[in-house]
Image (cartoon, rainbow, N blue to C red; front, side):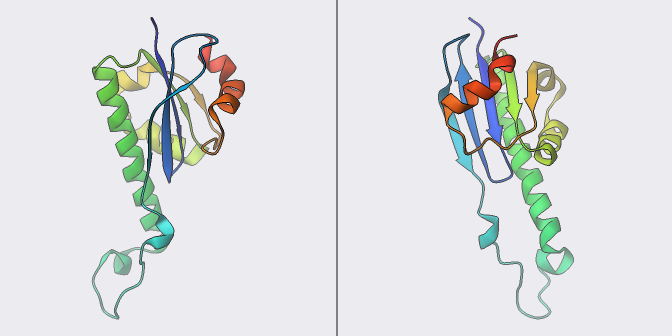
Length: 138
C-alpha cells in the first residue's frame, strides 16, 4: 500500500496527515506549533548584547522560520528513512515553501510528489481533500 503524507505548514504551525489511497481521506499524524513570535522580546536593557541588538525583528522572525522549516524537514527525513510514507505533498505559503525546500535532503526532496503554495493551515481535513484531489491521485 502506498502511503502519502500531506504536510500543511506555515512559519508558526505544521500539521501532518496521512492518506492511504484514493477516497480514503486524511488521517491526522502529528501537529506542532512553533513559539509565538509575538511573545518574543525583541528589546532589552540599553546596551545589552543579545540577538535583538544585532538584528531587527524581521531578521529574527526569518531565522525563527528557517529553524522551523529545518525541524519540519528533519521530521520528514526521519519518517521517510523509517518507511512511514512513500511520497509526500507539501502545502505552505510561497516563502515558507522555499525555506522547507532548502532544508530537504535529496532523497526526501525526491519523495515530494506535489507542492501547493497556499496557507491552508486553518482548513479542515475535508476541505484539504477538496483542494488536494489532484495531488493525492497521481
